[in-house]
Image 1: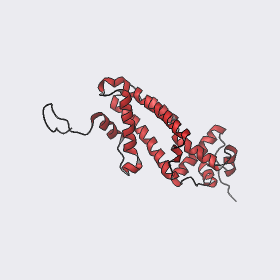
Image 2: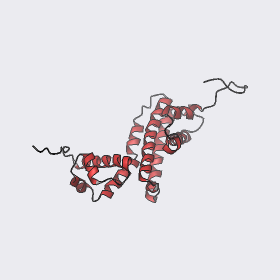
Image 3: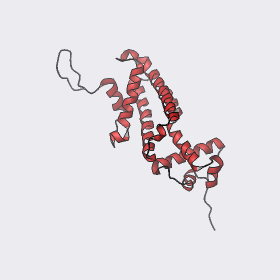
Length: 206
């Protein structure tokens, strides 16, 4: 008896589109943009023709997959779900972990594409700027309850957290040794210099 390959259960149109985009993004991250529609179909568990009932061309699908990696809606939702009642370091570590994940994925994608043009078009630059402002605002809201514990305004503290997370997570900067979210947050909050008593030089161990 000749067996036939098993296809995934048909999905509603929106879910099918999301599944194709997710499968394509995973392939692009692993192999670059020159993946075939056959590879995409196999990864998504659909017939190859299904792709062209959702997207006009493979390039349209690849572009949608790339755009999804830059979409900040899930990140914003996850940041907003962090428990505001938790201690400040706990809140910020959770935020740094989410930001680090996004940073690593975006730079992996840029390496896979072999170009930074995806982030340099005027349209994408404006979108990144708007998304960055939204992310910054949510980080400010995370810090606001403890503003009296900070030496700078929450907006500046949020900017520094975002910058330190990017710098401590960028694959080309950290290679195989990124800063952990905990290290990022405690470097931000406490710095790295040994603390000393007033009027003394040097410091004592933490």
